[in-house]
Length: 344
Image 1 (cartoon, rainbow, N blue to C red):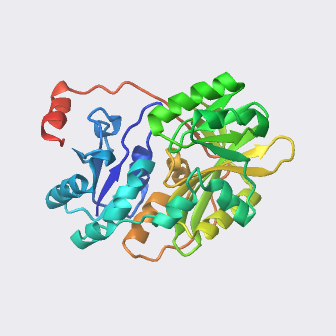
Image 2: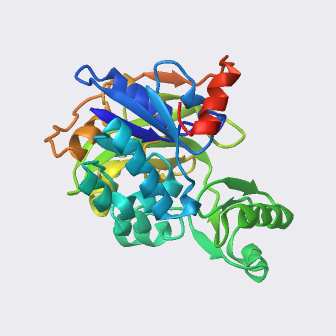
Image 3: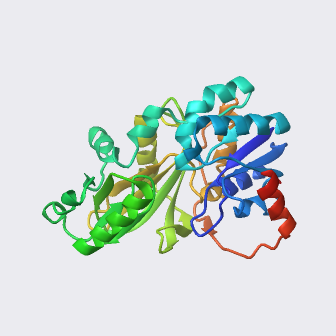
């Protein structure tokens, strides 16, 4: 198979592309080539050894659907792609809209529907959880500076200020809220989400839904080290049947089709799990699930191709991932080749 994967940015806020590719290569039955699709010529995954066999630049989602489709059609004419795995939130709407046209070329995808994508959106999550009786921190949407002045009457500090797509800040007073609002508004637009701050340990679950409501697999982990950007830099798989059951209930309620990440916080006061976010793709730590015995990215490839995939029943508890960085040395000619030709 020839599989294309996006999201090769392996920085301090890494994309899922590199760990997805590592998982595909770890599958004993996989043979074929991995094609990297990047938005930036400095994405480290382009240059790393044993990641992409060939890499191409593709237009940013903001460029529209036609430039993206034409670029993929060109890449397909060169590489004969079998499957594309988009791994970034911001590109999913475009790839979903193009999925039938890609299928007509012979390129398979396994993506959520628009309804599924919208149900779990940050501005809809509170309503979704309320309908299905999942515990979720109280939140409100803010679309103007006037709305901000209502916050002290609705919440106790600290609160969490979230962008509609990415990023979150903990605000300890009104000035913090105002500063975070300005940053997020300029970067991601409106509305901004103000969320109750629940204290406790953070847990994440990576899962794969088959589109009918069933979970092909799910692996929970507890964050051991969190960066100043809120990213887990180390984590360990845990034995928590209640958390796995909760994740399965959420996948069932969404009838989710594709990979996803569920972010929880376990309340220090009550021990209950509160759902913070549903990310509509595999997380950057997905290779931990592969290391623990559930190769979810490769299972997604098989589902995309219409194959039957059995459910994973177990995973290895106590498997740890520790993320690290290093200086990768390459030649300026490699960089110039990508910038000039758009491929390497």
